[in-house]
Image (cartoon, helix red, strand yellow):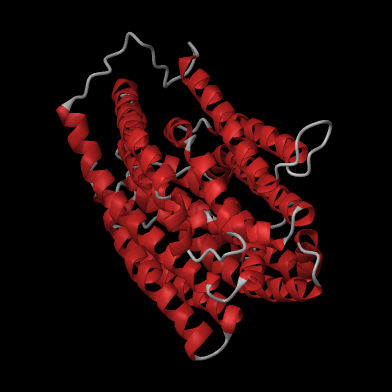
Length: 473
């Protein structure tokens, strides 16, 4: 005897109700086919991102246990400055995502490979200049980010060493983005997990000095990360040189710039750049507010953020699948399927959020104790994790919706959303809640809830109206 789902559950999860009849352009796949296709692309991406996040946590735990909370703050405070430097390349990746996904859907892999070549060339040329700039301005940038006298030297060293390998990182990032959007998430998973294993092993050897290696503390973390970045770059290049790769590139290909492709990429890169500027400005300003609360609070913040990043990876992995399927189906002239796959991604993300929120509530003290030795930091971190439990359902939904819009090429609206919620609301509310109203670190984290909620409302409104299905790339 087969059990029937209650009607309200069926209406919520069944593909037959996800697209209005007047919008359907053909047959709508059944639940098994549609969910199965999403999961097959999403699972390797989720495994990859979760594994990387867990290994990053191990890195932070090694630093905290082996050196101390001041070292955790030193490594943590470089996060937003590094992302600020990297933002221009993330904007280029927005263009790669939309164009390659659309060309894959159209069956034009020559154009997809041309887009990747242009992305690599632009990233290489810009990467050289950004590497030099990042190394030269490292110390004043760390000071501006809120580094304190006890950790600014370590933060500067860490930032300079990792910046030397920026070029390797941007090349890897461009290749991995291209592989993801054509659905080749298993290759990206192997590249990044291998690199992180190398990083964890080197951290074990270099932070405290084991098996004859020198004790390098924060500098050891920097070299471990940098060497792992080089390994990832090598593996990424090998992945697109393989004869069976759909994105195979060779030295015999046309590596000259083409005006038509540069124009297409330039339009989307510009919109992506606005998004990244707003994101990095907002996150940077928010990090400065947190840093002003002192090293102990910042250490608790860095630890809690590790769990937020971990939770983010589940939604981001699902979002990678959604982005790919949305873009490809728009290329196939099936906007109805793009809407369907966007909604499937949101439902899967909410299920993940429910599980993660429950884990946050039940195990918040145990998680905090992994990274910190001092009871007051553990207590503070546990309080932040409790707030995170309420953030997760909002965060996961808006992340998948943003991925759907990016996959469609509607990067301009995503940029506007980030301007309102991240660049303005988050740092402003964090400052008011932390200092004006006197709620300190807890108040700054409550500001994240407002930021995420505003993002969710704006992105959901855009997604529901469906105008993004007509975006041009």
